[in-house]
Image (cartoon, rainbow, N blue to C red; front, side):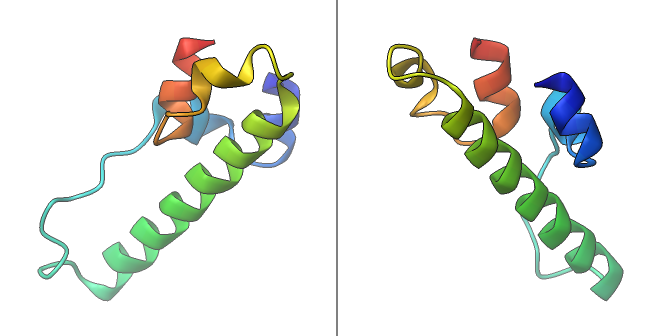
Length: 74
């Protein structure tokens, strides 16, 4: 999985996660774009991880809201 996430440029978001700001109204356009990209990466990586695990393992991560939490659980 680590190799696959690395090949998709997703490993950094899996390993480190990201912190979404609580106040998005004061973000610059560049910051909004970066936030959107990070959310997309996180969602894509979480989807991939959920699809990769079997039915026995899936319940352990099904309530994870981000890929870092799911990865840490596994």
